[in-house]
Image (tube, rainbow, N blue to C red; front, side, top):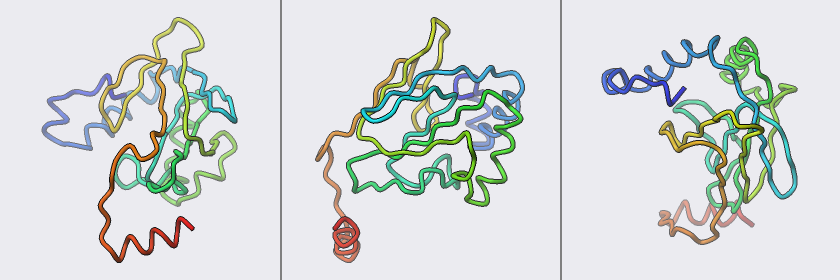
Length: 162
């Protein structure tokens, strides 16, 4: 979807351009499978969401157990190849019940590789921007950045992390 996005339309209407392209692609995209490999799990998926925070694509809360202060990603992998099934996820997503779906898998890891299953191109995006073709690797780099947190929030974060 990100690779087919009309950039002029995105400049004019912002996030709505992603919705428009999503609807256009729903029945023409082939939902190619690829392999997701972590140290603890391997799965074939058609979509993987790698989160360090709870929000995705604006208002959506998908990786709800992600924590920026934890040295792991939360992963949400979808395995269906059906555009109709993807469409059926929208109400459960809005109601915060995506974890109840049989073909949506959640787990945590500090590293993952997404790799194609064959020579067909499968593309990745990061935060709505094109990244490139698979394979791609995501890895947590402990203490890779320094966060400045206000004192009240820092105390709460320390309690949460303990």
